[in-house]
Image (cartoon, rainbow, N blue to C red; front, side):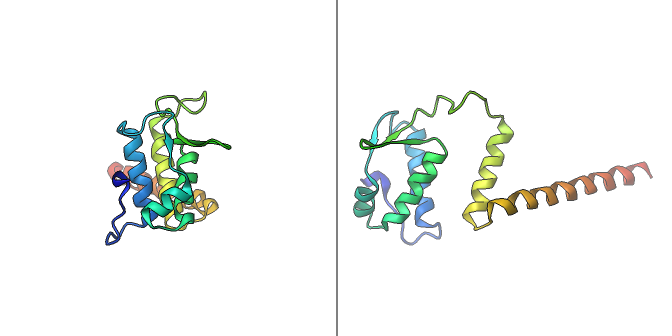
Length: 137
């Protein structure tokens, strides 16, 4: 599993290194739709990392639609070219999803994310209003 090496010296958390590497391998076509991935246990043993770390990565990738788990059969690469649902996400939705993921990674509770975004939007509106008012003078 050379393609899934972990850099112990990196300041990037191990789970994030593994997640990013798997996303790259799926997006680049190294892993094709319906390819079976190693089990959580197999990957943890091969990489000499904690089982829970690999499980966290797999759950994250399932949530984001990169992989699917088929009970009793394993974990497989999802066809990322096909949308996960009928509604089409806008480019803004992708940016928002990324922002939510990053906030969760640094430990911000999901409910707090919405509150913080609303505060920032309010601050942004105030700054725009001040700028417009300053231009009018």
